[in-house]
Amino acid sequence: MATPGNKKTLMTLYSAPDCVFAHRVRFVLEEKAMEYQTIDVDFNNKPQDLLELNPYGEVPTLVDRDLAVIESFLIIEYLDERFPHPPLIPVDPISRARVRVGLMQFDRDWFYPLFLRGYSSEDQEQARNSLRRSLAQLSTLLSQQRYLFGDELSIADCALAPLLWRLPSLGIEMPKGAKATQDYMQQIFALESFQRSLTPAEKALRG
Image 1 (cartoon, rainbow, N blue to C red):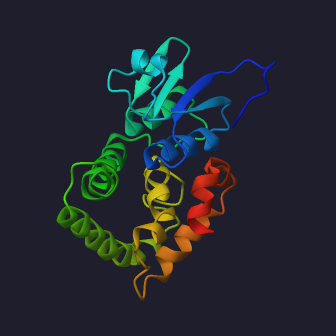
Image 2 (cartoon, rainbow, N blue to C red):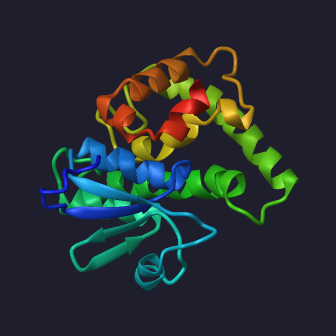
C-alpha cells in the first residue's frame, strides 16, 4: 500500500515484484490494514541502505522505526504481535505451536526447494509431488473448516496463499477430487487484503 508523500509512513518493506516470501508479508500488512511504503529491490544493484539493514541483503526486510526485521516468517509473527487486531496467531500455546510447526514445514518441504537457489531439479520435483499430494489431502480438512487451523484466518493461511497463487506458473494442476481445497483457494484469493497484496507481476501469473 503506497502512502501519500505528505503522510507519515509507519513502516518500510524492502520487497521484490515477484518474491513469494515478500508476498507473504504484503498479505499480512494488508490484512492488518497497515500503512507502509514498498521499496522494490534490484538484486543486480542492491541499495546500500538494505545492505546496512540486513547483512544478507535479502528481501523481505521490514523496517519499523529503528527496528529491521528479516525473514518472512519472523516478520509476519512480529506484525501480529505488534498489531494484534485482527489476530492471526492463536492465543493458546498448543495452537500457536501447531501454526509455527506448519510454517516450518511449508518452508522446508515446498518454499525452499521451489523458490531458493541451490536445490536440484530432483529436489524441486519432489517438492512438486509433495505439494500435489497435500493439496488432495487438504480437502478432507477444508471440507470441515474454513481455514487451515480452524474457522479464522491465520498466519499459516497468509504464508501459504502466495504459493497457491503460483501453482499454474509452477506447472501444478489441482488434483481431482480436491474441490474443498480449490474452494479454499478461491476464498483466500477473493479477500480484499490478498488482492491488494498482489503486484502487477504477480497478477500476471494468473492472467
